[in-house]
Length: 277
Image (tube, rainbow, N blue to C red):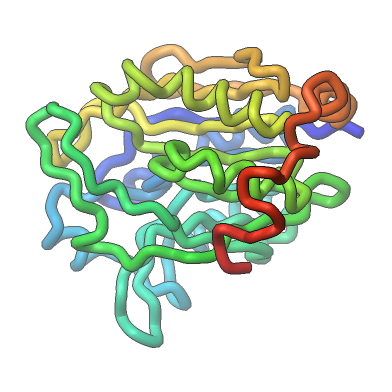
């Protein structure tokens, strides 16, 4: 059982329409070979300020970004993961950092609200306090891609290995880690954390990434990657816009988990779930 997958790398602007126009040819390029195309965190825009974020966040039930990406998934007949969109919930008007998966017919089949908020000081002169703007999610999400299962996570989640272990225990074959990692923390931690999550779970890891300097002055690391269940880097983007692809082969997952059967042990937590499902 195989699936052809792609991860995109680009620099989102602070305007959703402009960003979507910019990435449309990248999606078309990926769709020439890939059945699953993954976009990074902040897939359609990265605001220049908190005030602009509040102004430009889209309603979850009336999102220009969702409509456009649904149309692109349908046009190309692919699974399309918007790594995250900044959406406003209708019931309480709070913002969420939400990953959205579109089926080849354009329908939304899964969504995931980022659980772990990026409240950190990495030493790059920027203040990061995601919890000031977003409501955190609480529930892990696994999406069905036919015979394969995709565990949905976002960026800072990467630093919490128990989430990935739970996703693998619950049946995930692929772990998506769409990100807008800072240049400082990315240079120190990005490669090692992604490889560790793959090795610990015996899953493929697909990590589309933001890169470059954004409207708020932050610099993101790039280096979009796809990692094998054995921890090998199968594909890595260079600087600037990029599309990387690889084949997801279920037999490689089976082989890795037979060789290192660490998922068979639940001694750390017993049968207790760390997150609500």
